[in-house]
Image (cartoon, rainbow, N blue to C red; front, top):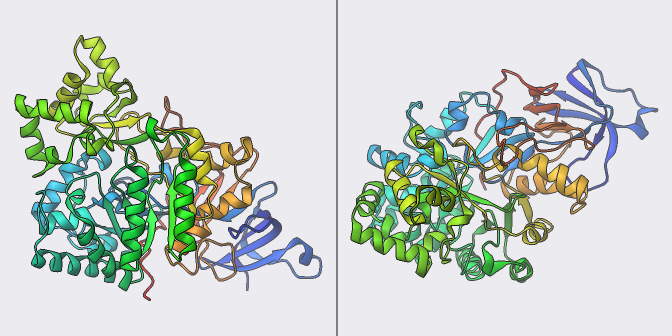
Length: 537
């Protein structure tokens, strides 16, 4: 019988890291049913199909897996979702950095929505008709642009049980948090995330986190922390997470594993040595990075943890009080806020990328220092004005990374790709629209940091293995037909810091579950994406 589709004469880079080969690949009912290599084609009947696609000159690879995405509401809000589909992304991992929208009650949902407006928008256009993890995944199953897996957000769990206060959980509260994490995993989450420079997740001590990770381990999931420092205490923070996961017997995936700020210039080899030592000792460890030097977060996230205690309303109250605002300024500019990774803030590196209030649009695209000079005031005065006027909805780029660190880390054998893509704001980080073609165009073709086969493995089979997905991440018979076809000579990120929403070039076709979501370089109306739930152990 004829298959649904056969892709003819593709250069297959199958995700394993092995050399490419030329083949016909047949797809039927959402799966790869036949692969006929050119060497065997002369002696075998070539597969037939209802439709044929000539892939001469194109690479066929597994669809890319974005291991760190912030599309929690974008998937529901924007059926097009070309930001990811056009990159060849066929699966995103959401629920990141310890803050997302399930599990919640009405009170917690409102507070979380306010806290991460800068990440995902206020959500006024979303019908929040779920409360549990399972209900959120069911909502995705109504049809979205690409597939999505979910991490139980530890900060949201803590907000639901303990609130936004800076204090240890009681034994009864810890028991309830354990139950909520277990319920989320049982309903299909693939692991748990934390944001340990974000409130309220940062208020959890290591003992509390270890107990929650024991639950995650029991379900075969993994722990994905945004750890306590990417600056002054970065190496100690990485070591803390490695030790914690080992104690809990839990797999560990280090989110956006960068080494930033001046204190860490050229120190990636120290991080990699730490990871190699842990791997040699038996740690189950992986990491993700984006191929850019600037970071992206919210302006309020830079404030010290004590200033964020109690939730968004309390933050605004403290900022409005002159004496308390002075203490915040001291921690930011002199002491080194924990929210700014223990490094005194350098306002000339903090660029406003988006505002919630359109009346503040004049600040977008300029650093805080530049705006302050134009206004004839100190940078802190400008930053405080923005925080208050924008009700904490301001997003920023932080220009604090180092290219040599980026290149060294992406070469590591447990590295995977993650965009950390915040899709909000007038000028979001270009990584949201460009991470995966930027790997292929700049770091493979232009710079040769990775070979094509290595890079594709980093973006496909390695993340699929971390997610315990036995039928994704490789071009294999029987595997899901989540696939991308790209031109290795032209593939590139279109997005730049000046034009951050420009779409990639050189990616004409993307399939999710065997259906074209990108065809001839254009988004179709297909919504083939669904939730990808944890495989039971």
